Image (tube, helix red, strand yellow):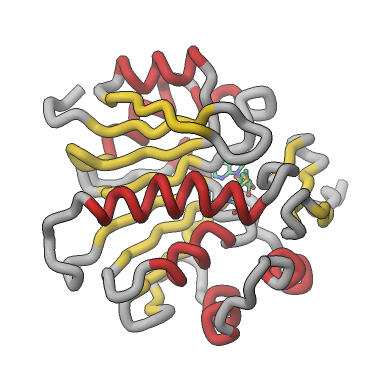
Length: 232
Ligand SMILES: C[S@@+](CC[C@H](N)C(=O)[O-])C[C@H]1O[C@@H](n2cnc3c(N)ncnc32)[C@H](O)[C@@H]1O
């Protein structure tokens, strides 16, 4: 049987998101998709991490996103890095297949993104690193997080943007998180909107320090985990 693709939904800051009937979940906060992405992943992820980074800007930092979805977080990252080199791995199990759906999300943002960036992102092949700008390399990787194999201690920042624990509980439990946290470098960040106690305890037990931060509209707290120097 054909699955119904995700449908477009407006959010409170004027930007749009998608709703998946398969997972009965939204791709972003209905209180503001753009606001949520900027708050969690760009401001408390990328920008805070770069503020404390000592390496030269031409040494790429590695970002992994769990759940590339519409590509919103990836595009906002590419737009926000100035001259910092970034290698971005965006993992997605069920890619959006309609370009019109992608464009509806991206064109709903409060400011217009560079058109070359929008097109290059969509055109980038799957499973091959592709230079999108002189400093931003993107690999759209098709697959499931459960099957992903990455080098331990190799990732600077993880955007953990899975559907909520109510929709996909196993993606927030120890077996999956053990691998995910093992990919993080010491001092690396894992960002998520999820502030659930059991998830927080799991990540702490796997060698992370929790930083509980104020959330975007509609969310009291978000979680930033910092990988401790001593391996778990
Ligand atoms: C909350 S949405 C991500 C939204 C996305 N970051 C964006 O900006 O549009 C969760 C995403 O995870 C994907 N997904 C679901 N199960 C997955 C799995 N096991 N491995 C990888 N991706 C998965 C979904 O298809 C969906 O695109």
